[in-house]
Image (tube, rainbow, N blue to C red; front, side, top):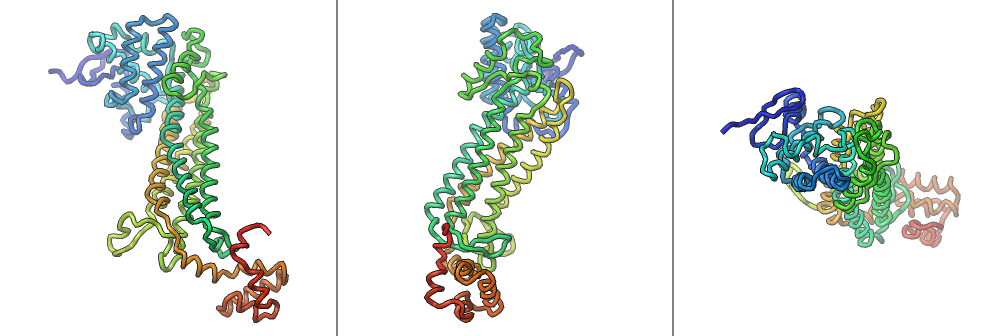
Length: 465
């Protein structure tokens, strides 16, 4: 049996693997862009979105009387298989291809057309009764379909992968606030001792920062609900009937349960990808919040005997191949490495977003890859950090109490009564002598024992007043 079959496009004949649904243009790209081998199937959101989009386009063309019901039905069935992941092996293209995503769009057109032909009893590669351009790509251009698919993929990945993971993390942090919130501990500024806080205030701040950043991601993600579909090649809508774009957006909304609409200005959607830039920027902000939290956990769990040692992290795995019994903050390390990758991705997206020339930005695939990878990494990292770290966090109460007792910045409570300069002298004397703050205060003669005990109340110092 032949291992290849001959497919043809406008440039001539191409040999395609006989067991693959893709056609001539996909094969050309496969041979001409062997860069990185990082395909869109890495998380399959783009392939899924292309399937959803091609189905919606077929339904819209059918509704508008531009596709026979039989052809539209076969395209619909084939596109459903693409969306469900049943044909992922037939999407081999790398990210580094034409900047418009034309080859990936044609990959989808060819796979869906050949599968539809097969469903209708035809011969693969014959382009009849279903043509990849004339039928699957009807009323469309790569310049509007690929950005549309990317927007759909981003919205779905945010909804399905990122937001549930962040919600779970915040809920786990808030549960720790309830569990450990009343413990009074040393606050720290500039990595130096400061006035007291509660552990609940400290952990609660992590939760609030992450939640605020997530709100920014939600807001930015809403911009991706505006779709380029209907703009065709340059934004004018040439070869697309009136009403096609809004109808496709409605079918996409019906299929996904997410709200999509045709963008108000289609020229902007093709020439710039500012929605992706905004999403990436918001992901960077979220990553920064996660970095802060992960580093705080790493510092507070440091030691356990020669560091701060106020938190105990779960003992998930051996920490060293040479030092027995060592436990490392591996979840914090994984989280912070993810953050550095997200920052790098955002740099790519930010620069690529400036590269729109005239009526088209030709950096779409790499922008899509960077944004979708950031979403996946942050979602996975949040899920792992929640399950493998936050849920198992506990407080080292004796260590916290010892640090609080030694905190010279409790002297701040004396300042309103004895003055800033006298309070500073007491703290400096205690530090020089190695005495407690109470001993230094009483020795100074500026404070009586009863006054010290009344004024220096660590728990009271965690509130205004």
